[in-house]
Image (cartoon, rainbow, N blue to C red; front, side, top):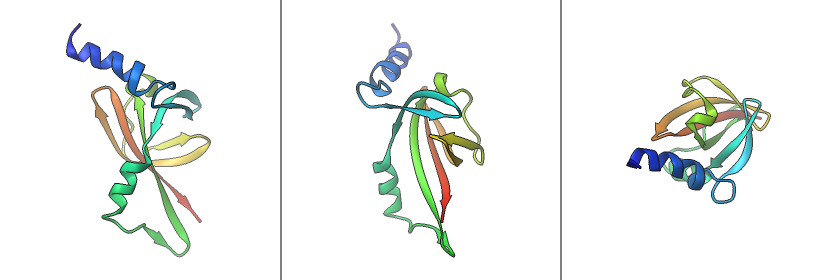
Length: 108
């Protein structure tokens, strides 16, 4: 087995395994294993103040999901429905078969 083949197996069986690191979430009306990373967002927020204007606050969320489960890498600005809430993609990167997707939701 090549390294890339092993990485693909590890992505599903370890990193995005609901028994290990992931939980099942509904993304665009499809249930799939997903890991929510609040720690990484906290690290980023240390450098930036929370954006808000006139009582509107942006809630950010970073998720990791298997590319095969999600489909095409979402474009920035695309709407993603995550657990019945509408988020807008602010960043999306393919990290060797796992998508790192940062999204935000306007809250009042």
